[in-house]
Picture 1: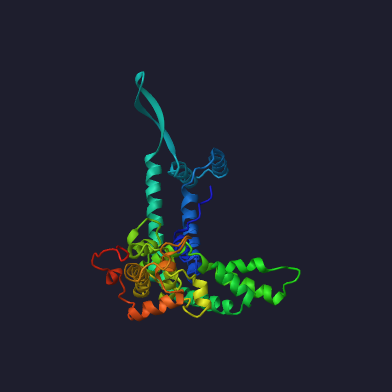
Picture 2 (picture 1 turned 135 degrees about the vertical axis):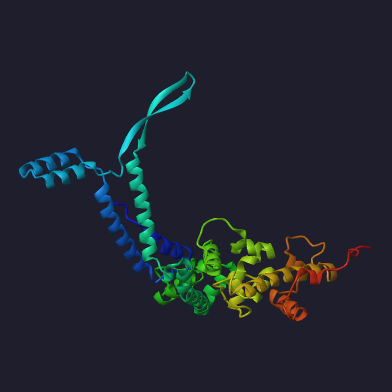
Length: 376
């Protein structure tokens, strides 16, 4: 029976690649680690070949071979082969079991002592081979560290490509993207029969560039965990979950933009402006975070606190400025009612009142309990 391939080192490298799959980063040592697995497999193949079960015909042939030259030395070697332990050798043992009719003896299959010794030796051999070939540059932490520059470069490219591709859109496509909030919607403007090839390429480029921005991928969670903690496990851990960290600081839906856009875009999202429009109008920037729970944690928290502060700012205006649509029929958002006439104006006022957004907090806008400003 062929030895099952050993993938110890390959699995380790693949786990890192899986955690960083959002960016396509892959440890440079992956191929070298795969070759080590092959060496270990070859070594264990020799072990398995020596201890694997043999067909009775092999022993029959061995006897015939000895008979052609019946020497004592040859006989000793034949007897040694006959007595050699077999790795998967099994025997039957009587076991007393209880059932509804009482106790009875049943024969159960069990490995022989020799087989168990071989299994223990094989386990030790595998552990020894792994220890022999393992080295510091093959640790999970080192593999992740070797990918960090590539990961950051990928995020930088996302920002550049998203910004430039949006600028390259014509007015019709840009209006479509900003009005819907989804750049992918520009693909619907393509008419294969009439749309120029250059325009089609521009639309597709923008849709592709914004695919990572229009929707925050779940793949961000394992990437953030790996980058900050050198952890590629799938075991739930709220302290190492970027989405859990988001929700600790704010539950507003704008929190998801904190991973990909700057603080101004996050505040504008609270004021009902979609990120793509914020970027298209020059009010904010695409600024993705490669390590939101590690090196970029302070910026990540600043953005989330900005969202919390923007929510608090609207609440403060509700209690001080009042509802411009009070008594009017229709559906209006919080910003429609309590913000400035436009999101851009709200951002300007918000920033003027809160020059340093780093420590922004809803509590800064809390008022002592007072009577309703509309109360008579």
